[in-house]
Image (cartoon, rainbow, N blue to C red):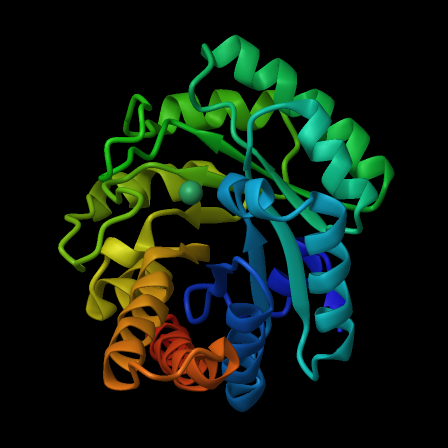
Length: 276
Ligand SMILES: [Zn+2]
């Protein structure tokens, strides 16, 4: 069933289970992730980012993911990841996304606050959840962005001025890491989470070991984003299958093993996020 971010997070027991949120780029990975969520009977978020939207028009991927969510036996959020402008947010809302992230992390704080407020007002009027970001989670692949840890003071100031439904914080993770070697500052995370009423979101969790995923949940993460780990799982199997069958040209023959690899990785990450 198709739900908002707020609806998906609400029933999850605090500090025992976080909402697993995965980046998707089309039908194959979305179906593989839903299969893992149905098997484990947990809600899940499917996220489309800027790269996905550069490949497929927002209305097309929105319609695809929303229909897949409606057919799923578990609650599924269709979430826009890292939008940096109001127009993209509203295109996603129009396309049926039930949740949007407005990322003002590269803006001066006052502008991040002002634009987040505007997005919240518009999205909430349409019944759509909003995730914002305070501090800034950096990138491991050279994507130009300044990275900055979230402080409790700035998090509290941001929250007092905005009303997002979830808030991404920067406490040591980095986007696009291919190994689980991120060093998380759990002492800082505890201070930030203690100042917030808004559920905390951790980005860049492909760089987090499964053991630390578990710790993130215990320390109060309510939504945890994973993209790279699933892209690696899909891509590695696709390469191996193509090398193993050089005469085969039908891509549908390759997709089955790739999708099973994505389901297995999603299952592993969802289980690591269950600290119950
Ligand atoms: Zn992110």
